[in-house]
Amino acid sequence: MDIAIVSAHELTPDTPAIARELARGHRVTVYTRSKAKGTGVEHVPAGPDVELSESDLLPYISDFSAGLRRRWAKNRPDIIHAHSWTSGLAAIAGSEGLGVPVTQTFHAHDTETPAPVRRLECAIGRRARAVIATCADEESELIRMGVPRRNISVVPHGVDIERFRRQGPAFPRGERPRLLHVGHIGAASAVDALLTVPEAELVIAGGDDLSIERLRVRATDRGVADRVELLGMVPHTAMPKLMRSADLVLTLPPAVPTGTAALEAMACGIPVIASAAGAHLDSVVDGVTGFLIRPDRPGELSGRIRQLLGDPTLRTAIGYAAADRARSRYSVERISMELLRVYEKTCA
Image 1 (tube, rainbow, N blue to C red):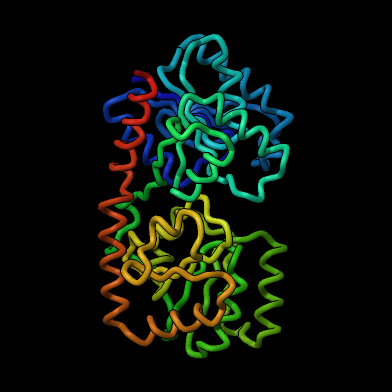
Image 2: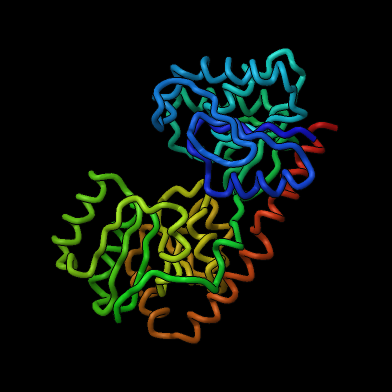
């Protein structure tokens, strides 16, 4: 099977690993605007050579789809998998007249999507031969959008368990218990929690200059700035070492389309405290592989942090259970097989 993966944006963390798995028995080409490197990756120029938001990318979608059309006219794929709604627009236009089925994953779709984008997503969802939801919560939303249930398959994001694993090097750290929050969205709750966990330090990975400054101000206002380290953007290649240096990993955004950070922490055997939303509801087994926290219950977050830091045996047990779940359910090998079944069904 000749598989075309289309991503108008920077590739999701698991895409290269899944593409490699699929390529063990099939021809796989990843078409992207980004300058991602690797076997089977084709750069399709469209617009300025910088990462753009989906709204900023929209004027260049016609250029991107034209580039795809030229490539597919020479080498027609058997199936196309578009990632994000802008990629879906480009894939549908680029494959016009070729008779190639398009499958679609939206990734960042949520209930707060602007109305014009929602209408485009609805149109893409109905036009695509299959829509791949990344969690049960997204499946329900797609059905509410009008995507036929029979066209929806749930295939979660995967994790590269060879890179994210229990054993391996970790970044150096001091004597304080270390909390790591991945991403700046939701990190304010972690800063506030330090008030009731006076012995711990908090490391926050991610965020732009503005969000980092806001978190710095919040930490100063709460009187915990000396225990908060703001790293800004961390290369994905460094995340396994960073996660293994932590006692707990927190990921507390209110909307969770992918849940990648929680999966990667679980694969490293680090207990996770995650927001009870989106993909986390599928991946984190509350009380077994981590804890799920509602954003409107800040006291519960502090309590769970204190519980885990105060009980090394519980922390170890949850870490082992988390690693087992990541390996058995979310490995890129398994996710690749599930995607392949969707592709084969769609092409039949």
